[in-house]
Length: 245
Ligand code: 13P
Image (cartoon, rainbow, N blue to C red; front, side, top):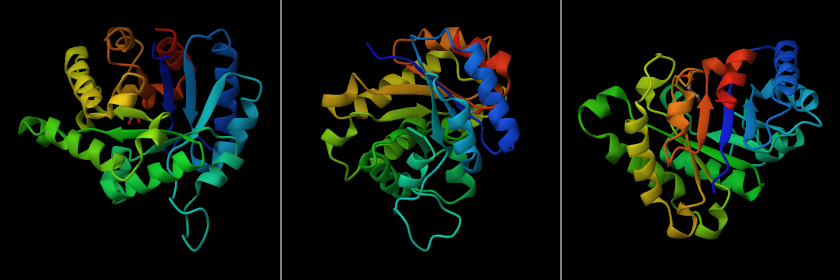
């Protein structure tokens, strides 16, 4: 049985005070949820205040990115040990917005994944095709390249905590969700790309316009093991409904 992960990616939203406030409201409204893993991913500057606000709750905190080195001359970056010291246990890697706007490649994703695993952060590795790629029937090839690229040079035994998020780029922030059938098809395909020893245990999350009214039909699909929620994760009532779908 794969325990569902319901994660909120807050992206570049909320200042320190607002983020702590959202976290404490979520702590109250989600205190009765015991059957799922809940994670929130605020901006790096808010990690500590959100971790503090969520102390003594079952909600985990994740960063939205990391650098693969532990320290050094990398202006503007944060490392896995720093993320851990701010109370985090998860980290998002290779989000499509990072690939699109900040030059992330399968190679940097792989280095970041290695660093996260080394420091025992649960990595949430994002993959997904653009609309153009889907229309050209390249979705599966793109996803295969992204998954294999991320896992390349990482030993199978180190991948036990790996989490993958399938986020079709055309569904992010657009209100267009992949149909449960489209998502299930890709999730099942991603599972075939994973090493056999971890394939059945690896959680594969869906992301892209997950809302209170579509969460249930998506989460009921056999290979969808949770959600990575953007916009709707910023509203207490919506995220609560999604988590409790
Ligand atoms: P939306 O839920 O706003 O479409 O964002 C999805 C996402 O990118 C989560 O990482």
